[in-house]
Length: 214
Ligand SMILES: Nc1nc2c(c(=O)[nH]1)N[C@H]1C(S)=C(S)[C@@H](COP(=O)(O)O)O[C@H]1N2
Ligand SMILES: [Mo]
Image (cartoon, rainbow, N blue to C red; front, side, top):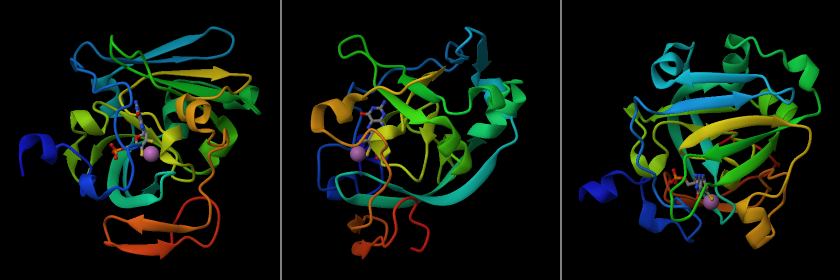
């Protein structure tokens, strides 16, 4: 296995589609320069360095992520829950009920940024998280260093790697793949058969949303 392959999601070549990578190209992130910027609809801004982020109360959980093009992988993610991130910044979410939030990636000069809108209350309820490590190691560049958002109840096209900004917004807009491929704005994982790259077999997800039974 060469270095390039090592950085990729396990069984990268076994994924059946092209929607599996950094659409905008892998950004080069200088960890000391990077900041996560959070803005509230009233314009209030919050900024976090990588060090500050790592100080937040964090969890490590084994959860399954699913790509809309029918592959899935269960991995051990370490990061902070979205609700804990907001709580630690004194962001009062009761005033933003019914809102959405836009995630923007660091992006690249050539191709810009990757954006996705997610409904806020749903993401909080589903224990969505911002992860900086996977399977016990820091995220490799290809997998979203230094931080990626993951809502395990939604297809992965909703979950931005190389996260740079979160903006709480009154409305949602179509993100990259919703526009291009007509995927749902809502992004809820659908019950159907998926290729589990970790199990090396097909499995059926019987109910909509996060796959927890296998
Ligand atoms: N910034 C960014 N995040 C992204 C994407 C992307 O193109 N750019 N693709 C999404 C899609 S469709 C998938 S399946 C996963 C792939 O994550 P992986 O590289 O860890 O397998 O990243 C998601 N997040
Ligand atoms: Mo995907």
